[in-house]
Length: 393
Ligand SMILES: [Mn+2]
Image (cartoon, rainbow, N blue to C red; front, top):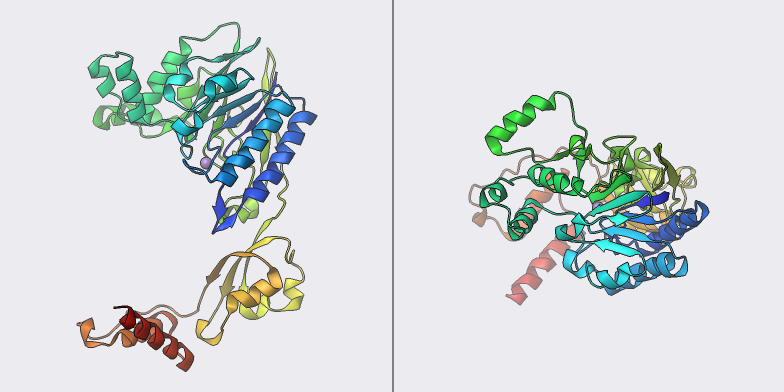
């Protein structure tokens, strides 16, 4: 059996106000192409399908088309769970109907205890939950009060949940888990720490790989890079298919994609399949003069990428319309930062700020931050703002 493992689509997400929907749709097309080329038996989406609990109508329409393409057009099963960004109750809508067409979606803890059975594997789909959800669930299950109250941390909760999942194991099959949490490697010297912490504050606040020892393979969502996988062979993050923030523009984070998980009776292997960005995200850090130098900017993918620019050694008082000038050369600028040589100084002034006029306070603040006095134009702008504010009063 072969599964495509992806996660953290965050459909509807924006990057500093810029919609990522086109980028997400372009990534989806590649995911589908990979799934068909690899002839997978299903697509796993390990949580954070939407970016928010109440997604925009554009996001809903877009995701609807994607899931239709997978499940109706190409008859591929979907195994999806809710992440912490998803609205569990809303995403739950139509769950029983969808299951008729092999679109399996779990959004609530209570749904996790019945695995999907394939001829060779049991697929456990455990959506994101918090310790309170676990307490409520176990209370409803009639677990003795004392044991319910003993569930303090997510570690406590997961221990109990996994021990219940294990009771449904079919020894003839492989046991796969899909879930959505931060999972970190279990260090050897944790052993003492665990017992110590347990006795003092009631268990670890994070999940460690040892909790999932009973599963043959774990497909995770939550952390957006596969490089964070806590066990390189067996417990893996697929990462997000799209770069979501400027930090991920760093070459170190390159390599968005999906993983193809191949399950045989003797081994489970995974293989990374890259996804190319449609519009790449490029970070630049250079002085103003360099940024405006054709020898520099002609090396850049002008008007084809999104840029996050940090202007170094910048004296803001000497330039106007900085963003407009840069946009004319580079195209879309999703983030613009400045670094000045000036070290901000403490604002010195009368103890009683009431003695100063509002525009004098602005002037002092400007001086403390930039080391410069407001120019005449800037002073006029500030004056005008305060005049307007007084009018509004
Ligand atoms: Mn996420």
